[in-house]
Image (cartoon, rainbow, N blue to C red; front, side, top):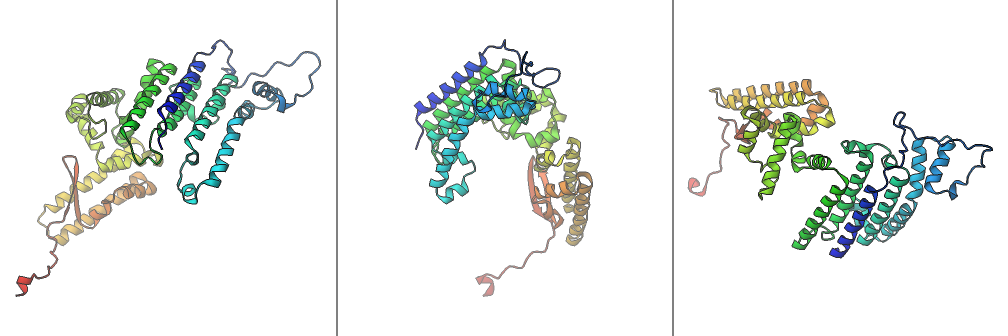
Length: 409
């Protein structure tokens, strides 16, 4: 079942209308955040006799928040309760949809689905999307962006944006992700030309909505952070650590190749263009950082807390072991002597990795290199023109072959 183009257009237009309303809203209202203390402004005490406590259930969200602050509740608590009041309709409808979906869905589907909202129909998901947009916009208008980002995760993700813009962009990304998913076949098993046309339309509308929210400089920074180069080169960057100019040069190469119809992925970056931008020495370091054992260590570096220098040193140890395996293979030693010498070098490298990376990180790193253990068993592993090569140690005894029919005769 395909979602209709009309439904996609209606959804996109609705999101655009909400964004225009928020971006163009009156900016002259005083901020609810005190710039010096970072806290919420406490309402002035009423003159004369104190009014009786208000019935909290009868108060509108803005009044509810002000009443809670006046009673001494912290700003975050007041924000969270007022936000819950605004999202009440959305939460109630979401619970109703999911309760029915869990009852009607077969057990295998409940067990296999990663996002429980995927148990809902497209129309139900779109209905929740619309309710969430209304509630989110009301929270931003009545309370402020801090109520949509209680743990600061959105602000950290979009640290180059003001808090209100960060919340809007985060919501826009989630909305368009759901809309894009609706352009596919229900199980994402078939992608037709019509699907691609819808996705192109959704992508174009997303770019227009981003342009309504962000300045030109903010949009460029957003596109840089979401570039395929940033995602695909993440492990390589951990060892290479490009400067701002080098990063801009790599992004430019990727963009130029995409515009000329070239494949925008990592492996497709033009070698000569990269060499011309980086220079011979840095190009050599860039190529080396792209080796599997460098990228493998770079990929676990953030989780293990490894610095760029430690990543480079650890991967360099494996480099030396690989070159040593090749050098030993070319000596005049006997097979057993070669195998013994390589086993010693392998054990020494493994100990050095534990010393440089720490035991836990070294163990995790070795898991990422399925061929590492084979070096200790006598396999020669080396790099040749950017690719890994594997060969048996020369002089290995040849296993006896079974005689053929002719040999038996």
